[in-house]
Image (cartoon, rainbow, N blue to C red; front, side, top):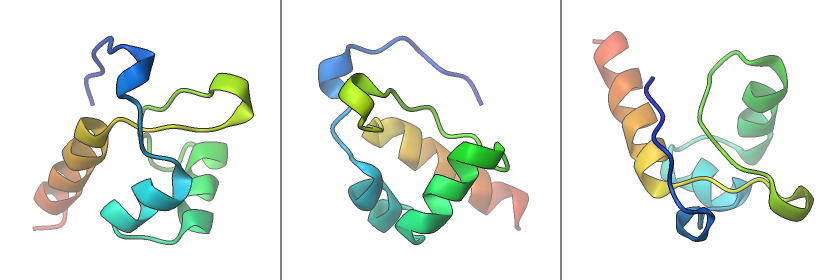
Amino acid sequence: MTTTKRPASEYILDTIAAAQRIPCSPGTLRKWRCTGERVIPYIKPAGRCLYHPADIDDFKMQSLSTHS
């Protein structure tokens, strides 16, 4: 997965919103972050994980193409 530098202000999805968009549970998303099982770029300002909507969409498309 390619990551691009994006302004921090564009990372607007917290763990719950990102999980709903995938869809998966927030716990699954946390597990992926901790284990590296699936990699979705995020930033962590002030201890809060935030995701860019385009990164979530890219992850979904990649997941669909590998499971087809």
